Every structure is written in C-alpha cells, then in structure tokens.
Length: 95
Image (cartoon, rainbow, N blue to C red; front, side, top):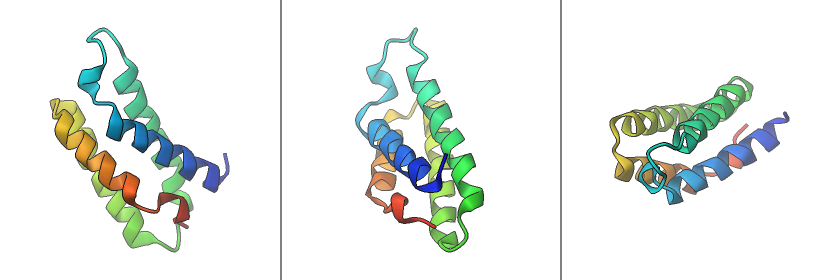
C-alpha cells in the first residue's frame, strides 16, 4: 500500500472512531476491537515511512497509545475525544 493511501485510510478509520463509540455496538460484536486493530496496523505500516514530520508522528503515536488505553479501559468518551483530535490533524500531509 502506498503511503498516501495508508494515510487516507488511517484518517478515515479515525473519523469512524470519533463518531462510533464502542458502546454503540452490541456486546457480542468484535467490530470495535477489529477497528482498533486496523488503526494500529495502519499506523505500524505508516510510521517507518515518515521522515520529515517526526514531531507530528510522535504526537500521533502518543495519541494512539492513549486512545488504545482508553478503549481497553472502556472509556468511550476519551476514545472519541482523542479520535476527534487526531481527525483534525493533517494526517494525509505527513511525510
């Protein structure tokens, strides 16, 4: 996958996470955990390619870590807040 395509996919996944709380899904559904796994996979693919915007990349990494922790503890409000903040960043412009 090309870098730009992966960044666009990550931005789209974060927009979904900002709008769809894990609590919005039935308890039996694995959609929230699958969605977060996809966000983590995309970022792990993207991060090694970033050479210019290292401070922004580090900020994204920290935010994703905090978002994952919030998800694991069931803090849906915090997950959405972090996802919204990341959605406002120019992720597609990272290089």
